[in-house]
Image (tube, rainbow, N blue to C red):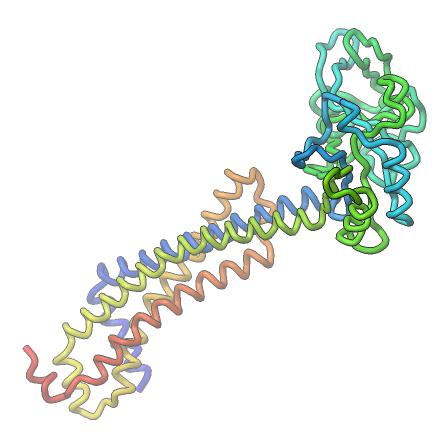
Length: 398
């Protein structure tokens, strides 16, 4: 018997193909909107996650600036905005056995090669023994001499720098020439030090060149024992004992990452909800179509009921009709959403490597399932109304 109702439902859709196609189009648009925005949101989260994954175990300590700006890799250096050797020793003591790395930084003019123009880049001064724990190399070897340096991968590509190249520091090379011993692996965005477009020298070379002995721009704590939140709290209790006169600003990179992920998740949910509105509109359209179908087929329903068709059978017939529209529209929308997600990812994220993932597969499934559920839900009342028509009145209907 169900096979008969299935065939009748398909026949009715064929008889009203234009109307049914427009209803399917609404579902397609809704599914595409929800799924494509979900794919974009997932891609953004994974892109940021990959870019920042290397710094999720860090706590960054900077001088308190009276309002908490995160000015890293600075150009202007003042004694009031520097950490002292005493501050560093306090930090090192309270975070043990975790590694505390003092960081010097400034912006400097330099040139590569004999006839190259001056460029401006960030120069970081780090203790040579701590560099392997913070930075991974793409080529060459770590620098242990004051006459050498490391460069970021973006710096190397932009200025055609290779292992063995020489870089003159300062205008007209006033601070001397350094030989590149290694190229740092790309790190992307980071909260501690951004080395992709920078030059890394030894702390001794930096201190001798810029006369900043005992003054640091920041201290990076690599947390391998305990959690970052505990380390952050410990540092604040030790160095910010006077609430009115704080000494340092402490940043928990892991907590910051979680905030970023939550923000992206909220944005994705919001945008997907906007897409969901179009799905609800499509559902209303299907509800209207099903009610029209019931009104147009009152006499047919009356005849079916008079020859013994049960209410459940009539309901099944109309729910089948709503289900066919929902399934076809949702599946078509899911396919088009993948294509839309591919285009949006290529355009906005400049990469499609995050398209084929488990999270995106779940997003597609959820979007398609939501479209089908909306269609079925909007078909229940019209189906119920059709099933409960009085057979005698229905046959007399004109």
